[in-house]
Structure formats: C-alpha cells, structure tokens
Image (cartoon, rainbow, N blue to C red; front, side):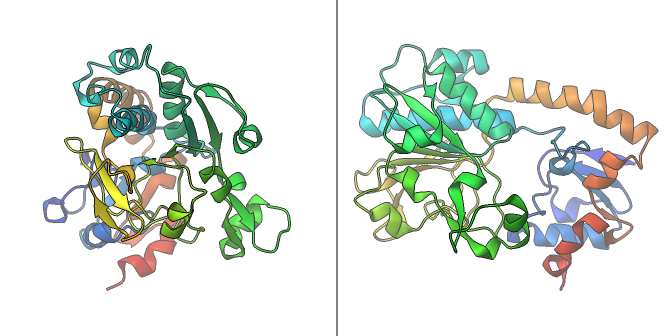
Length: 334
C-alpha cells in the first residue's frame, strides 16, 4: 500500500492508487517534473513529499540538508585549492564518513579566505560545521562588509539581509512574503568582500534574483568561486547554468559570454552545482535519514495516516491537489 523511495519515481513506473513518499521536486514548479505530478494526479496516488514533512513550527523533520551543506562546503574548499593550484583534497565521496572528511581539512593554509553563506536551515548549518572544521571563524555581516576579520572568516546571512525594499522603507517579513515584487537584491555589498559564495538558501521564483552576470564582471566583485548547493537552474544565481556531477563537480562560467568555460579559467567563475551532494557521504546520510524515518514517520503512517504532519506534506490525494498545494494548479494544467 505504501511505497517509499528517495529521488523522483519515473512517471511510467508509478503504480495507481498507492501512497508514495519521495522527494518529488515539484513544490517550486520545477519544469522537469511537471509530467511526474500530472501522472500522480491521473493515477489517483497519494503523494507525500519528504521535503514538506514539518512540525507545527514549520521545521523540517526529515531530509539530507545537513549533509548537502557539509559536502557542499567541502567541495567549495576543494575547488578553491584547485583554482589557486595550492592543494588537491581528495573528493568527498572517497572519504569514509564526515569524520574522515573533516580530517582532510586540518592544517591547511587557506590564505586569509573570506566566505559568504546564504541560508539559515539545515543546509546552512551543515556548511558551518565544515567551515569550523577547516578553522574558519564566523563574524557578523556588518563586520564582514566592513572588511573586518583576520585570517579565514565567513559570515552567514538570511533573506532580510540580502533583500531590501525598492522604496527604501523598512524590511518586514510579511511584506516580503505577500509582495516580493516590492523588493530587490541587496547582495552586491557582499560580493565586494567575499572570495567564495556558498548558496544554501531556499529561493522562490517570485523573489528577487541575487545578482546578474554584469555584477560578476564588475571590478568591485571579488567572488571567484560559487558553490550553489541550492542548485536552482536559471534561478537567482546566473552562473548556475546546469547541475554538475559528483564525478565532475566543477565547471566554469564566463560572465562576459554568459557561457560555460573551463572550471578554473582565470577569467571565469568556478561553479560547483552538484545536485545530489549527500550521496557523497552515503554512510552518514543514510543513517541519519533512516533513524528519523523509522522513529517518527513510519509510526504515523501505520497508526495515524491522517495526522496533521502527513496531511501538510500530502501534495496530491484522490486525484486532486490538496488545499496547501492549490497554487500548483496552473503548473499541472494541460
């Protein structure tokens, strides 16, 4: 009656009238999974999305975000070593576990490296774990954009900091959620002071884009490497023109031509956009995921299939979008 996976199920493999749990990657209207959701509706499937399993405070209960952050930050630092030709860390997928991964970062000279991180969820905190393991010190964002901080430093910022009202009035979360068109990016001030940008945020297509290719060409831009853990293609970060792979995690982006280039070309931005980062630490990620699944979600499915946690995460039921996901109606329309 219940089928549980991880990544998307091929539409042709879906069995009618079953309950499925997997990461559907449809809640942001991702074009490449439109047909998948249409088939879920057509086959009268109850679709529960892991990404939407949250408690009453809106905190996610399950996911691989922390490990995406851990590996994404490691890849960023590995990419930096390759870009400057100073060191070559072994790939994350060759590490036994996170403890082994952290050991690779010890006693390395990063050369007064400055990193800006966007996001405040599990991904961001995974990034912070890795940066701390590498010996980076966290400083607040006003100090960061003032050029303060000695040695290797990073700052973490969330959407009220990297967005602003176009009319100059005070930022409020309510306004941002209801009227995102009234806002614009204020990320540029961080581009002047960061060597690496690690993206670990959630972004909606109605929100402002972070910057443009022209901004990357600006003489004031200091960023040379972007690790886009969020990996929104044609999203807020113009250099993320495609996902990269575990085997080949880096590619270059030439902001002049707006085309892909060699990964470490001096005139280009190095991009890391692997979209399945937790797979590089399968031992740790699987253990963490399965513990939450068996202790919390499976008991609810067996004993309380209509529990609010499950209902909030149910995108489709009985051939219809549920009330929380009516905004996807135009997305699945023929």
